[in-house]
Image 1 (cartoon, helix red, strand yellow):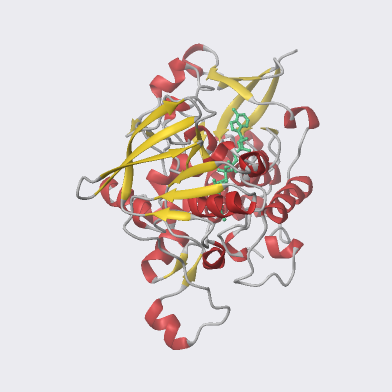
Image 2: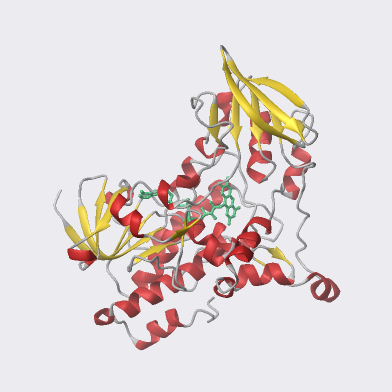
Length: 422
Ligand SMILES: Cc1cc2nc3c(=O)[nH]c(=O)nc-3n(C[C@H](O)[C@H](O)[C@H](O)COP(=O)(O)OP(=O)(O)OC[C@H]3O[C@@H](n4cnc5c(N)ncnc54)[C@H](O)[C@@H]3O)c2cc1C
């Protein structure tokens, strides 16, 4: 496959990659976005799932008007859960309308990124699974949560037919008739358990928390009193501080590192959606206040030892364990970055340290999405952060490439992040 050149290569076509592509192409840059649009949502989330985020917090970011979720689905109400397939359809519509896609790039993956030329003078050499190598001035790593799926040490090392991460499953009917332990207390754990029960499996939720928590039904209209006392509504929920984390991620970056990490941990702690609560019925066994400490392979399954706060042990025998135990960003797990490049990226606790424009310590390399959460806070874990990230990244790249400056009006559009767009 022949080599080629491009201004920017974006690795990953989820909400962050697509939003960044929309902003960059609007500026007239020559971009390549690699990966099938919304692939992770289609392949790694369970059939039958609904989004937890409300419609106004489920928009991809575009400099063009008319690209919000409700532009495709006018009248979709707050409190009306969005089915997974409806959101995938929105993401693919957004991609078709606002992003220059190449069909061969949709079947490709980025397999290697390394610095090009002496000391990276020529930017980056990006190799695709097709064998093509693209030389690019900038690379945006928008690979989402998938590479960071976390399985606790106590469960790690067992074969995947016994222990898997929840992101490994789209079709839960494979577990029909089976005893399955689901570890975790967040939306993924609770929804996986309900969908397992719907599929005819026998799920057992095991949660470290003392009790399960549930979000309340969002009100479409809020009284003035509620708004003053409860704080404004935002893409992450209601409350004054929550609003700040959701709507002003640029300010979060200036908080001390420990505070940022605490905010990421504590904002939206594990809880189920209000609409899931009634569906978690007697078909699902729930054990709270217990954490797994050991897992041993049996002839026909797995023996899971858990312990409660007072040290009381229990052994549960199941045929499979699904770890709904989250995602932990760690640059070391991004095998597509050449070791020499990875070694140059400054990290803290595995996450890249990023500039105000999402640039890593290696000039021209940007990280969007979960990998940016320890810098910009919890909104980077959600679709709602995509427009902010895309606007900042595109603005920085275009400033770096003066010969490609677009018209003044378009430039003002990206350099004014607080401008309201329809
Ligand atoms: C079960 C579940 C439910 C969720 N529900 C919500 C919700 O309701 N609302 C919300 O806001 N957030 C939700 N999230 C979080 C959601 O994952 C993120 O908000 C969102 O996906 C972030 O977009 P992204 O573009 O960073 O990542 P992704 O959507 O994961 O997109 C990244 C893409 O990059 C691709 N990729 C990875 N490696 C490569 C490579 N080497 N080359 C090319 N492509 C690559 C992946 O296949 C993927 O398609 C949920 C997450 C999970 C797991």
